[in-house]
Image (cartoon, rainbow, N blue to C red; front, side, top):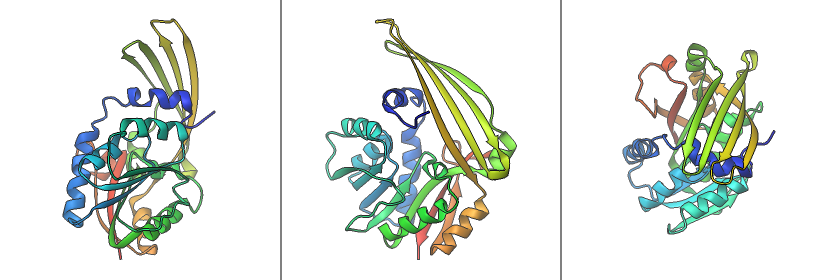
Length: 252
């Protein structure tokens, strides 16, 4: 099974059409202004199809957007073709470095939970720190252990109709609780109602969930100061009600 392959990338924005990127971005933008109001440069690690990238560019930030999926980057470039002071780079986010430092590093839509290897989280914080200016801000979200244990992964299916396409999405998770891992097996059945062409896509996303205490420990170990956590979509206040959590930290 692939991850963010060409066919999947083409329908990615349809699958998340109802995700309120603008509301989420406004919250993130407000946090940047709260903790580093003079910020001008953004390093976006795991930009995907560029939904947040486009919004950062509209706010006149200088943006370097990084992703390792060429199909996703192709869509992001098309979406942001009129943006100024924006560069897209194909690279592994754990190995990315740049000649200049940034005011803010972001990694959004649970990109951190795709880092499932043993030292991946610490490597992510270490590399983010190397790319930040002094007192720079790191903003990222991840699957939260308390929320996952309470809400529990489950099989899901959903139907999407968009223009000439009808899409059936089936998610079937395999839960490896002793490893804090969930393997999300996704099947897409896509019908072009005009041409009657039918395709099937299989994707497998191995996701790691983290305890907030672990996040704080790794941040401190990598010389970050934890500032706060928020639930980005519905502003929930209890940690065990949040599947995903957004964290803001400062380089020290």
